[in-house]
Amino acid sequence: MSTILWTNVLRPSPTEPARDTVYDLYATHGQVPRTRVFPVRDEALLDLPDPRTYRSLSRAGLLLSAVGLPAAPIMAPFIAADPFSVGMYCAIENGPNDYDSARQMVETSPEGFAAAYKALRSPKHYFKQLANVPPSQLGIFLGIKGPQAVYTHSKHACLHALDQAERDLGDGVVRAALVCSAFSLDDPLLTMRTQRGLAPDVILSEGAACVVLMGDGHYTDWRTMRRCRSRDSYGIAHDLVMLAQTSENDAHRPGTLRGGRRRHSNRHEPQWAVDRPIDSDRRGIGR
Image (cartoon, rainbow, N blue to C red; front, side, top):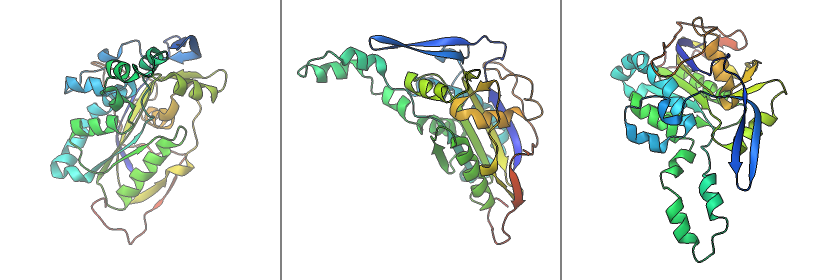
């Protein structure tokens, strides 16, 4: 299997009480029961290297940067040797729609629609809706210039990301792979859809995770990984959060944001994934 060089996970403290999240949608209110979020506003989640990027990142994008930026010291030797030999593999949903502007434009006349749209819609909000912007921005911050793959499948995106990272490491496409994911309750429709797929006693929680992999001559079939059940569900990021939490230092302690201690593990062998040697005819920088 790949060697897990480093992991980081961010999740609200299990002692944080679960609350209902209420969304103001047009003339009605949408409510999602049993949710858990970080008790800080978007701008307080982290200090970005470039403050201007706050305007282009959704809350999930900010969580992705918060969990991924501490990987810089681990990635530095690989990037110094060859920034194109490091890849990024991200599982993240599309960003939130601008419901507030849409609600204000509902009663707009056809003649005044263009002016209202221009006045209400910020062009920068479009960047928050694109799934590839958060990993791209994180890659810029870290100096990664290798391949980038983004997956948005609501259930299997983390497995897609891990599988592609494993294949690129095995084929020698990259020497190191940063696999990351983040989930937030930004978008009401996305949150409601995710919550409806959970058991009644499961809490829907914000969360983010980052794993740095390096090839070791074996291939891990991440497609066989069994989905771990827990008291909390982390949406699209669930599988990666569970994987990161099982590292030695992350097993029993919640992640933190500003100023928090970042944990890492030298290696973790998931017992729920099949490990087998890589084909002997494979050659490349990843070996």
